[in-house]
Length: 137
Image 1 (cartoon, helix red, strand yellow):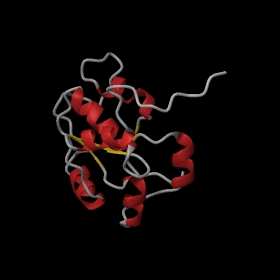
Image 2: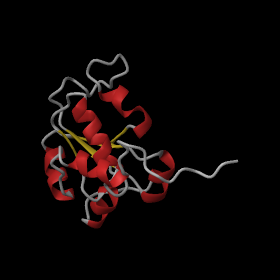
Image 3: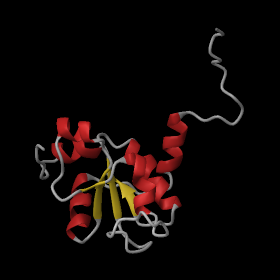
């Protein structure tokens, strides 16, 4: 067995670079800004897996769409899209545990044309720490 190659191939990027690039294209929101937008009709989309939601808790009213199917459920041109996806103008706020995966996911939805997509800075943990509504599943 050969040793793994540690030299980065030409063109390869680090996760920190990918995250910074994604965040350069989205205007992230705080928990209180998200709550205001949700009250006005934005969709809060929780992309955490079931096991993580079971441990951490949930945001009442959040639409649960696990990360592995997110693009199919939110592409307005997809036969697998959710009924809430009524077009490209839907306002979407993506939520993960700490606000890392959600930035990458929000950027992917923006690439699909959902130009009003953002993510929650600090994720579920910031939401809960801000004293906003949560529930234990």
